[in-house]
Every structure is written in C-alpha cells, then in structure tokens.
Length: 131
Image (cartoon, rainbow, N blue to C red; front, side, top):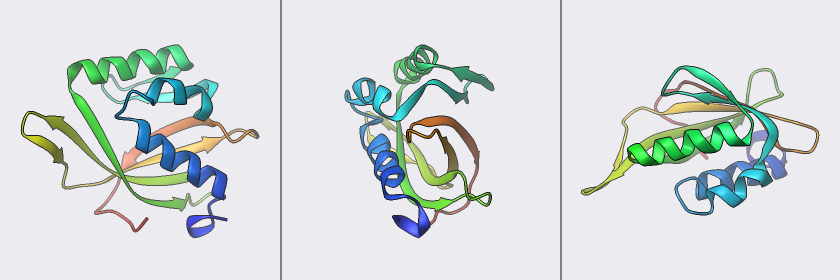
C-alpha cells in the first residue's frame, strides 16, 4: 500500500498523470492511465464525456484557451474505500508565470480491474491535504 492505504500502483499512476498533464507526454500517456470508455467531467460545459476521443478534444480545448496547471497536494481513499481522492491546486500559466488558486479542489478517481481510470469527478475541496 502507498499513501494512506492507497494501492501503490494506483498512487504511482495518479502521480504520473499529474506530472504529464501539462506536458506533451499527456497524449501518449492517456492510453496507459484511462480506460477506453472512461467517464470524464467537462467542467467548462457541465457535462460528462465518454472515451479517449472526447477527453482528448476536451483537453485540446482547455490548452487552446490557456495553459491549465494542476498541482497534486494530497491523496487519500474516498469514504467508500473504492475511489481515490486527489487534492489538487488548480492554476494557469501566463506571460507572468504560474498562477495558483488559493483554494484546492478534489478529483475523485474510480478504477477498473486492470487499474485504469474509469471515472473522474470534481468536487469542492478545502485548503489542501498532505501528500
């Protein structure tokens, strides 16, 4: 087990996801971390996306609008014991550098039997949690 009772493979996968999100490695890593029929939130439009193509298009739209950043600040099991909650601090990169939000949010991940992400949800967080 990894951080606070999270299986080490899930912790490693999630940490790597956040490392590559803001890089050109994002695309090749997608198929190593997301299930083909992944259920993903489109926070911009308030709808759910399904599958690689939809997530790929959403991420392309996000990066076309600006350079989003997400810093992992903590990991813990969800109350149901099945999902992993990742506390993150959102931000953006602009001409003046990296700008980080004051508040954190939570990304909640569910996995299939192969360890791939099948669903991600976003919910309000707090001030952060230890990693």
